[in-house]
Length: 343
Image (cartoon, rainbow, N blue to C red):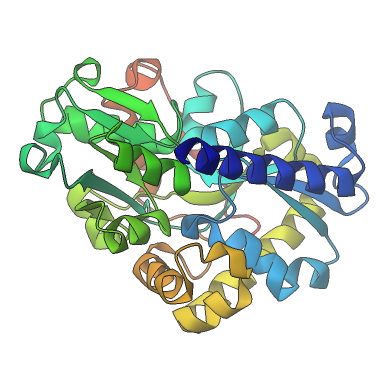
């Protein structure tokens, strides 16, 4: 039965991507290079049903892309690192994922920038299974543990490593396990293949509701982000190749306008009203639980899409604490984001 659940989740994700790609008339770097010139854009999301990336689908549901005259196809990958791969390979024009990838990519010689900043907190939660709870009470106890992340090299992986190093545990002293999110994460906790892990809503809400575990560290609010990471941590964003942005400014401006309009709409509507606009199958644990997941995550979002002033510096400090690629590298933070299109 457990194998069936995992296959179904993977198959559904693959089917969604395949269906959307077919509707677009195919992919490929040549097609992507032309994207935007005809108002057609492909955006890869690091998990369309994750509440941290809710503005992507909500903008589509509200009709704001069409209002701006851009025809957006949203694709989905289970983790942000996989979404980034799609951008670099030229299959899509943009990614809705974590801003921290722009710094990681810059030191690898790839110039990518955030053009709309959805959030000023990670929206991530470290949960611990009930079975492991007695021996895992803080990041100081990460040593020897198996900790779930959406994917190796993902933002959940980055943040888990930072919390470990900050609390005296080296990155080679615990085992990160790529378990995705949703049903695959829940199954991993249920089977005991992970002791805990970092995930987002609605998965967090289901972990607690099904009594599989409890919250260890909550970074869904600016306050929680500051306590765990020492400052605001800009996370969910729309990021794109800088060269593409510079050559398609009118299209990027329209996208930014649509997303900012959504962020403002979210700030003036209740979690119930937001949930009502979303596809019903996003409420995997039931409507009431989905509404609670949105309510718990809403504080992470900005209202204007603008990068918080001291946010990039926090991200750089966090990444440099454990990432050998960035540790001694010089990062030009001003090239990792722009406010030109949202202000």
